[in-house]
Amino acid sequence: MAISADSHVTEPPEAYTRYIDPKYRDIAPKVVPNPDPAINNQLYVAEGMGGFPFHTAAAAGMRPQDMTLDRGGFDTMHQAGWDPKQRIEAQDQDGILAEILYPTIGMVLCGHPDADYKHACFRAYNQWMRDYVQEDPKRLYGVGQSAVRSPKDTIADLHQIKELGLKSVMMPSEPSCEDMDYDHPEFDAVWKTAVELDLPVSFHILTGRGGNFVFKPPRGGKMAGFNSIMRDLQDIAGMFIFGRVFERHPDLRIVLVESDAGWIPHFCARMDHIYKRHRFWMKSDAMAKLPSEYFQENVYATFQDDWVALQSTHMLNPQRLMWANDYPHSDSTWPWSHDLLTHHLKGVPQQQIDWILRENVKQLYKLDVDTRVGELSLAD
Image (cartoon, rainbow, N blue to C red; front, top):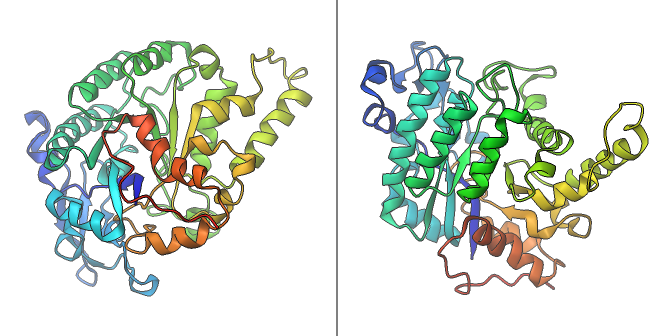
């Protein structure tokens, strides 16, 4: 059995309408029929954003040829996305001990242009998530969200998230304060607070302001866009390293969520090459450690179906890799995670299997999970 380091809820509309600041209740995110009569689906809409066809956000277990954006709504989705009782049943079906739970609609809202609206939505979501995980606090662990309107507001968000009992904070790929990025010295107080509160900082794919391949086809079309969805997270890792954030905050931990991990060895080697070969003409001061060393110590990565990563653990820090089933999204390995892992983990040492499937996520988030139950032994 394993712990999923990245699973998702599919927020029902009341997650926002029930908990949101009354000022925003009439324009809170909601579900509506598609206005195009030729398309039989529902859309999640938010004031100031286009509609989001969310059916593939709950397509776990479907055949590839059956997944579509042209039909479906809440009545055709996995109810475990918003019903915690059914969530436990879905975990049992896939051999999952516990899950770290991220949003779905909240990911899309990360790109909302109105920082105040986004802040109100995330505050509401955090309270809804607090209630959701109460069904089984030893198997359901929620991640809170911050709109990152300013460093001061973000610190307040961190305290709210901690007080609600959530295990991490998820931030948009880009802060809402456009005049600074995460490596700006004014954010040092944020990272100091995250360390003091023992809150890992999570960055999930598809949480940037520029939209994503669902809304705006990139060069090469949607397939090319889907193939490149981890690039924002690579940029974030590079910024935290070369922006000296980890040098200033050595105990800070960030998580690249759904980033895959097979790319990490080359990325680290490339950073070291740039640092050794090019830092002088770029007038970059010496670092206390090599860039790769900061990555291997301060950066965690989650993945689902990444055989390359599991065959490259000799070039990675296996104590920073965390497997996930991404339930109930379309990239999920549910309900055949055991079969996939049995194949992918052949030849991987048992100690590394234990780290990647259970112990790393348990240690990072201080989970109260008995990982001695149902151990999965897959090594040759």
